Image 1 (cartoon, helix red, strand yellow):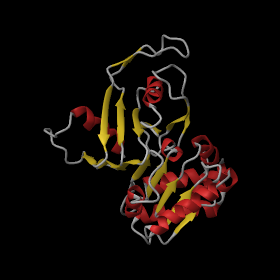
Image 2 (cartoon, rainbow, N blue to C red):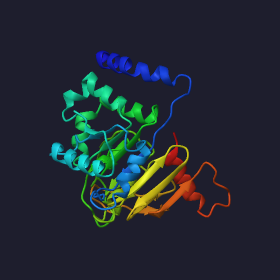
Image 3 (tube, one colour):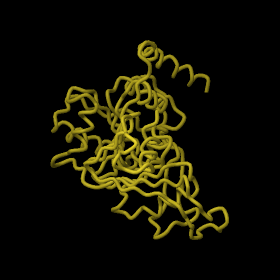
Length: 303
């Protein structure tokens, strides 16, 4: 543990000194529900590349969630190349040992943006959890202003409290969702993906019944929730994002047996279609959307 901390401190010393005068800058998150278009207009990939700084940006692919990472990386390299990216490469981070290597940590810190592919979020966290590579990823987003995207499993892992597995149940049930520790880039929320297409509302509600302190975020396929720290959220793509706020909920989850049906009263649910942006910094009291949504957005963009 001491060796790991010394390695992290030495690698972050340069960025920390550069930021001493200007202060930390938190980057954007692009949370993709999976199955994003990589062939036609590629709207989500184009927006990610723009947020990264444009075609010359150093885009790095993190494919540790995939069982076929080289195939997946080749697909994304080709897709990004066809929209103008000139420096898109796979991070050599496919097994846990690599997450401790100084050159891998340095590659994360040197990247302008990182795209986390789909696969299995538990596999991804098995590689990254409690490693210098994860610390570097968090530092790149939270202090260096880097854009981080995640699709499918990469999206599910964005939150600190992560949905790891669970069926698409018809109604909320106790203990049907397995959870784990995610990347911690979106600490106030819990994310589910392939949301409408796989009927995952009840799965997300089942997770929220156990963690009413979190905001539920469900992202449809070929859809992205963009989180601009302190500023706004935006939805792009072809579907919608569902926000579920359980903060005022009454539930019987503490009184029922495992697999029992959960009563959930007083939930707030918001459906945000693609093409909409919700700013908070300059929001007026008479904003055309309700206070409950403003509060939800504020939690998502809080630094």
